[in-house]
Length: 177
Image 1 (cartoon, helix red, strand yellow):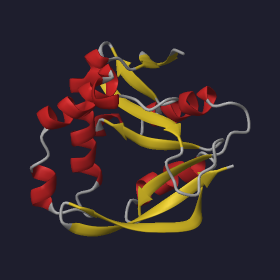
Image 2 (cartoon, one colour):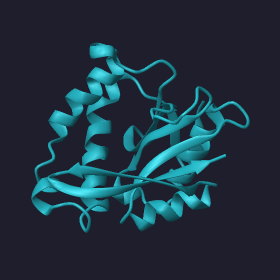
Image 3 (cartoon, helix red, strand yellow):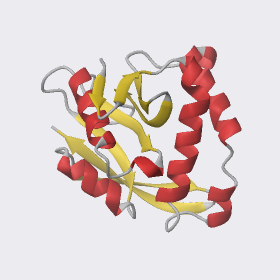
């Protein structure tokens, strides 16, 4: 599926996108999580390391994408603006018909331009009608929570504690029926 929004195209990712996805991933984390995660941890994120991980995922090495997993890339004139990865729910209580948004990140310069909205619409359009979807969001990430609520997601009361960069963080599960 291809979507144009003022020169923005959303398309399926390929292994050739690994380095671009990694750069967006790191830049987005560094901008979005500055008040949540340790500065030293964020500064130490390495796009080259992340690119190797994405290359393995997208090329099918080390198991690659799980069955049913999709990765979409948003770009303008060949420049990466963002990506989304989604597939079957990995939650312990997820049934076979629930999907999960594993990741959705944009280059910080693309925030507020409608790119995320179109990326989310593309993700949701890929799901069979009426398919529930979940996602996990950091408790302190108000911007993301607001975005997800605008797209029909709501916190469902399930939380988990994870450790990122040596810091315990609370993640909230959001669900879209």
